[in-house]
Length: 305
Image 1: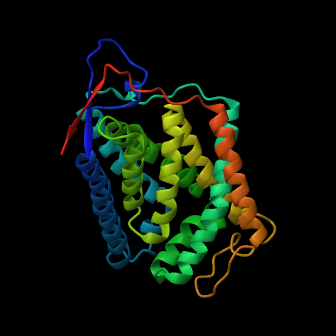
Image 2: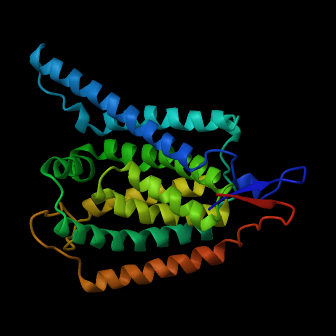
């Protein structure tokens, strides 16, 4: 069931400033397909370039498709096109398009604690998924190149902590979620946005975590109306995944390069601590944020089937 809100008042309204007229769900799906299509086209292009350099010019293979910087630049182009289209559909200028909102120290603490607890639990969920459904060898190698390689630390930070959070949050929480909030109830809008966010990753070994994190980041947006806070939460999450690979001590199932051939799980006490920390983060963040503004009675929900 889809609802459209009709504004019968004049002047800005805090609840509506968190929403956009577009996209609806199917238009949002097309934006995601646009990102994937551009990524695929540019990925094929650099693959052909790499092959030509190796076969025609007899140069060493650059393996551009595995370079974090190359992947990052492709994503910037792909997401930039989708974000620009989303802004055009809403007739918004980039400088005034995304709500930032005030961010307090207690909100940042709540986000950090939530992300830490979620990271521990999602790490264990990934362990279970890899045993039930082992990823293909090429994907294992890609994960190791992007997430585990210590000789590309700055490139990984650029890709995972800066580029991915900014581009993905501007599109998913900054445009798609806000468009769906003008048509659906908040939980439905967050869920649909999270499903599209998971679908973007194109494989179950990333989609499971993406779905949960999409729900978490969506909740952050509902409570604060701040896309900037979602960007920071995403950066914290990805930064923590890098930190786990750099720890000087070993925690089975969490640190180091994952073993895709044997069942390695985290200690029970770590999973328990992760659940406790996540719940504590929920409590801190909820206390640090006021309830989201209610839709005024003057806005009539028109239901279409």
